[in-house]
Length: 141
Image 1: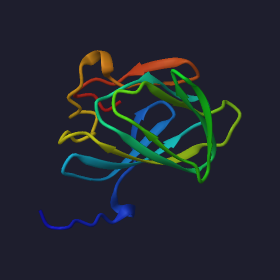
Image 2: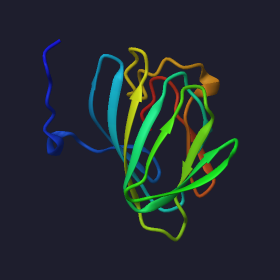
Image 3: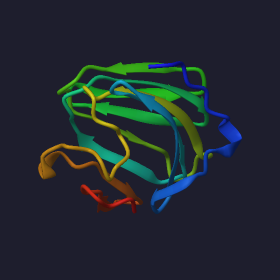
């Protein structure tokens, strides 16, 4: 496969759910790079998937949640979540929006929500102010 370069400004923001926008910057060979903008009060409920996930908070602050407890995450902080580990992320109601970059290696599965090949139980729950929205295969918000 030849190298690929994506011109960032040409990649459009897509609304995944209330308070969540994403730019799918590039994906290849089972790895995907996304840029998320999360509004105050947004919450990714605990979920898991088979692939590892790497991320970095570029601006704002939030809370990473694991079964073992919570970890504060703010601009400049990075994280690594192994595959099959339950995790979530939330933005305080009174905080600024969070901009975070996320890298996922999905064993050949593109992470565009319409292409995720996970069991429905493992669909990503995204909510704002406690109102969950379930994204399923073929749904982009």
